[in-house]
Image (tube, rainbow, N blue to C red):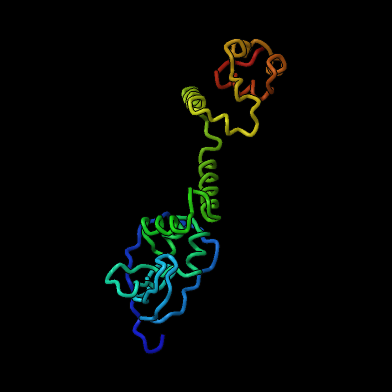
Length: 211
């Protein structure tokens, strides 16, 4: 910016995970001059550019005309697009905004819920996949299985199942009594379950295969 002294507002970076959060679009810092008058959409007022942030995506900061103190990032059409597109964590990481600022932006832009923007949906899906990968293949004890089953019944988690054949058909005492008394395939045919389900239930209960 020829003839203009660049003023940079330093921001203390907050700790984040080792992998930077995904960002779905490219956001180029607007070319404005120090002291230039602009319209801030978030503040709905004419403002003056006071400095630039030193965030990962450097962005102009502004202050309403006639107001002393209270400057913040200039919300123009580009930053508004980011607010409507990116996840909560991405806005904080890339633009250096505090938690309260992002919350205020989202309230102003009518972004509600935890997975309403494309970036938030991607972040939630990635977190779910990472969590599933971490526990996939783990051998659970009988006590752990019973606790999970109890929790699922108390919270009525069956209502979220895509296939609800067994939503109201837990294992009965009579069905479990049949485990190990005959081949798994025979038990499965009698009680209307798959052979694999019968085998898993028998092995979970540590009931030996019938000889």
